[in-house]
Length: 293
Image (cartoon, rainbow, N blue to C red; front, side, top):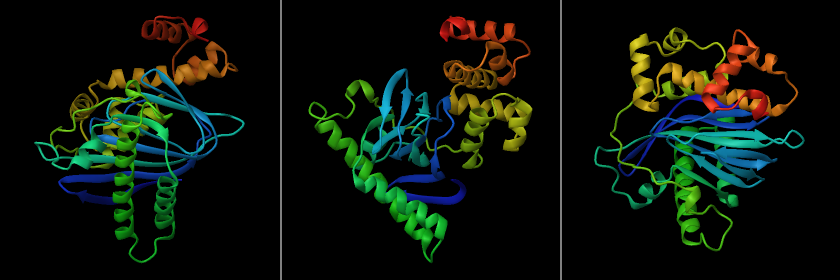
């Protein structure tokens, strides 16, 4: 289950966090390649099951107890093992900073990571589970508890980053090649509505076949021009570039499945003919769909 529209914002020192969604889901369907906006961070904890994560063209094996974070502009996709699909706890956050960046050393450590992959202790699992429990049961004071739990979760993750960095040569956690520093001093700008991030990303992630600029603008309650401007500002892509990226990412997953013909993949992606799809795929990846498969 994914919980949206939580209307939950909290501050730590001089940094403001807005929660866009919290989820506890069994990942039965592949998640195509996508990225988040320049001030968004998604936290993933796998409680059980197995799968594969591809992030910025590197491949990682997901096992129970895996924690990974996908931050700004990190392209990633994930696929569950069909015989033992993953169950994932997720928290999706938007961050707003003062114009000169945060003064907090701990929060700088959290924000400078644009990607992390490694094992996490029982503390992260218990915090994720407690978050879901508070949302589902809504006991008295649950909003205060959610804010406190989320702050504790961020502290635990920041400590995890620091511990991993200090013991990188000894542990199975990612090496420096698997993490990227990012500029945490982005301006404190926001979209018209915090849920806009989620609407944009889920539109391309799940409705890549039929999404149009007009329909996306309608979902956002914005004009076509305002929608294009938002995509350029926060994703560095036009609408057509975002749609092509989404369709091509989905194409790779469908082709890898191996049980669909090129023609059926083409029509599932919304192309008018297999020839049109083959031409688009070859232009994007410089290889024909049949050769890719």
